[in-house]
Image (cartoon, rainbow, N blue to C red; front, side):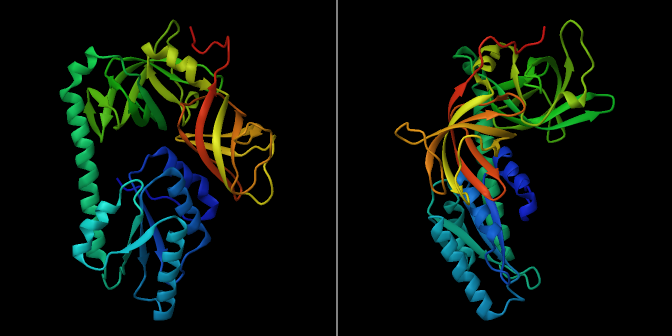
Length: 369
């Protein structure tokens, strides 16, 4: 699946949401040969490095670019990759494609670079073959994992119970069906007629629902396994069995099985601690600063309550600072987990890091009767 993300600065939050929430296997960064490396190109490279997403570079429009400008663009591409701790691996002939595919692993120091023209067709065959081999590699890995999971399903049931986590990235209201939730199952397994909990909503509650049907790639299915994207048709449970409405759901909510109530109590929080690195800020960051925090499909403004250095002393943060920050969501509680990658932004100010600690509220009712 190809996901087209925005290149313009105005839609940077959408690009960040795509990189954090969609869980891409890799990213293609497009550079116009006649325009060279733009500021947003550097931003996108930085995001890929911060989120540890393997990437490759495609230089386009080489047919209309003067020779001197083209050479200058090549130099700038090498320079910006060097700053991202990567070496440019130029794919000049078909024999280089297989090696370029091998470069697309997390932590690899090489980044494949393709030079193409849609007018003359130069380089398109190699790029097409590269994407084909890359797709086959990822599809084989997913298929192998899925088959293994289904074959060993009975054995896994005998082992320790595995928590389920399904993150919503889209909500639909289908006529004649009702509410349909789209998202990715990060762990565990769902089956038709499972009793589920969906939330937290804007009031912090989880709603009891019944899983009526599952669709994967527009095909009905009885099960959805870890790592698969699916849509779930649900209906309300409980004493009142109220009709579900679209405005009761939002992106970033989580769906779990009814047995995972304890997990929800531990991971539904308004406040959390994160180890972060400030990528850019024009002045200093201090308590009271309110950026937008991206944690996978979760996207919400949060206020900084405290900032401490590695020695545990109160401090302020500047560009390049590595500090521990305590955040508090401004609008609603969210379901988080330790170790999840995050990006925070406010205008041109940006930083990245990982969740280090969660602070679940005490004596708070999460489940509707």
